[in-house]
Length: 397
Length: 204
Image 1: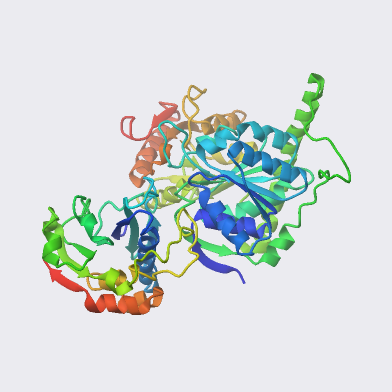
Image 2: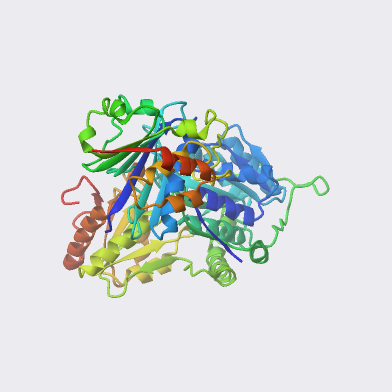
């Protein structure tokens, strides 16, 4: 029987890792993801989880140990937040290039300056081109489930890619919510032990990560790109299997919330979706034709799904809890991806970014109402007056 | 959006981290037993891991789902509980509170002695004094555990020391959690009952 309980995202995610039977855990403390490692260290100490627990001397070492553990055939698990994610940056491409399907839990956090514990998507979004599978959870439950599902995706022989399993710091990681913990036997059936095809072992010496000649580079990168082309089908199958085995109703790519008859939508990911749902509920009662579209994966980016779904609406407000200063749209990164996805669509909605939730600021219901007003105007006019609105600073928002 | 009843707990950094956290959990869990929607959580926005710093723990109770769970602090507490009496002096423990707020203080002193150092005491509808430390016995430091902080889950029983009598005392000025449900939720059941029995309520 599944166990129903209340847990914050950190504890729920640790339970996900336990259910996934991770074999090597590497840690280095930084808020807000620390709680995941606190809980896992307790489980290991109490004998509830049979895993090696290695404490790195910094995030670079921590993630390097993860790479080594994965290379030797272990199901390896690590995590970080904010500047910790940045400090390990050098190791990300070797891990995805070496095709080590380890997992890194991220409870996202703003970068410095001047130093802030709050949630922001900038940390891991600034690494999004490093060849890792990347997606956000909205709730502790989704974070726990994603941990298990991501291993199944990453370890698939057609994929063999590492995964960033992200939840919003504090909003998801620290605030308890309902969590249903599946039975171990169900997860064991869904996620068999990791079968590493080329494990490092003295019995069969192999060379990992050697220096190469320039003309060998493109072939290796093409393989990594092709792995991403193989990933969508594996994701769809894994989520369908998980839904069936555990009794969930996750959509693989985009969840539409009250989009029937909607003319304009909020497009976002992570914990702020929860507030967006309440905002949509209240606005719908007042007759506003608003809905929400939640993004579940950033890498691989669901290009055709984004195009199909967003083409149905007259206006799209991309809520960006991260920055990409000086980029094409002068705001965050998501609008670039959204607009690129819509480029071949015969029916393109007006599109703008809302910069909101930076530094971990809570996005209030009132701010969602103000964003909806702008989207309503955009839907009527058929175009965006501005590419970017800074919520709380721009006129009328 | 439904009204949300806010409880703010003041305690001391590190040494009362667990008991403060447990008090918010006991009250929330007791209210949940009667069908309320609840939230109990730690302060996050500042870094409360320094010994003896004034520290806040929070609780929200509502008849309907709490929509704004992400707001970091209670902006308008209707019940304030002070776990260590010296905190009442020099800190605006009633920040954000409006008229009609109740205050519970862990102290051997009289209500008047406490009120004398609270400049905005006109906001209070009642003050409850209880010697929670005396009832709990010991120093309160026997049970220190941090696994339940930072998004983790409690590894030890909830409500063993000063949190138990304080929760019992709080039932005298708040009907959102009953004494029975608080007793059912806290580990130190005798402590809860003794706190409720010996608490002195002064209506203002």
